[in-house]
Image (cartoon, rainbow, N blue to C red; front, top):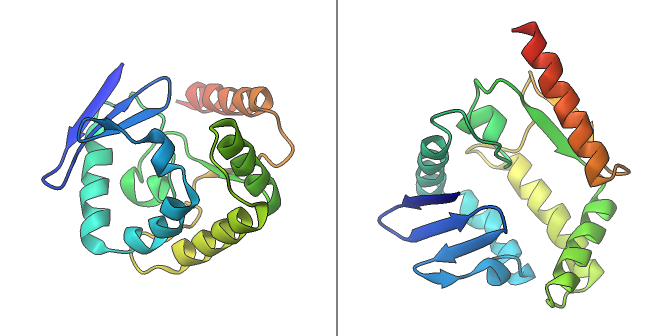
Length: 168
């Protein structure tokens, strides 16, 4: 289905599945994946009013608990009481290769060096920011997916959810 949320600064419509993001009526999916935008994500996300607005929107989207959400502070700040928390990680090199492949498939050019530098810089900035820093929630389960296929990751997550459901 469609997810709609608004704020006084912008009107975003995220359409799932299909991975299209609309901003003020324009499809911005390709633009928001560009390196130039990635380089600005961490500096902008350090701003308190940005974090506050985004957390409010994220909580609204997940108020019925019928959502799977990813982000660098989802399990620690946005949904600290989530039933299942997965702290997903992979080596910077693997993440860079995946990002490079994604960009190439979408027809966006970028260098591997540029991508890996962006990943390392974002990790550093996000883990050292004062507001909502990137960190593993104490009750999160770590999934290092460096060498797992998408299918293996999905099975791992489904097994975890089933295990957690059986404990309730």
